[in-house]
Length: 195
Image (cartoon, rainbow, N blue to C red):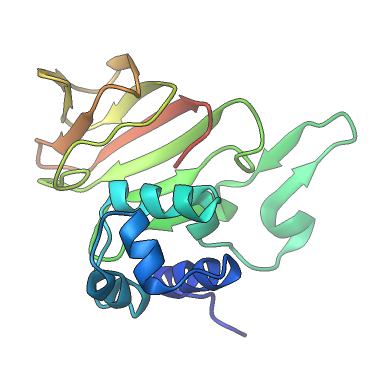
């Protein structure tokens, strides 16, 4: 069985498909070409905001970097009815794991082609979403299922626990951190879809 390409390989494939050099992509994403080279060789980890910048520059959704589950019945666990109803089995979700990060993002919607995106996110104790806040267009609503999460939105900080939810504009920079001693599990809904 063939292994799926790594994150670095996927970025390199997308860059080459767009006929961009490493220097051109790096300049457009405001990173050095040597850092991009390390990312493409899986020797460095892009931040979430850098990955978003790469996806935008390459003209793809960040979901293009998601791991695809292979094989299985009903389209690898995805089933579609003639009326458009689609089911994604829990063990066949598309998953995004950033190299060097323990945060796990699982897509609950079948893809990013609809008007809403839903994700299952697991953040280990002491883990930040990234080294700095990030922002993009749209809105989000999250509900905490387990654990203690601090969310910084702009200059405000909110401590959330099980059952708490938060709604906010994605255009305001935000940052999340697990402040407890167990995994934080949350469901996030975003519109428009973006990883």
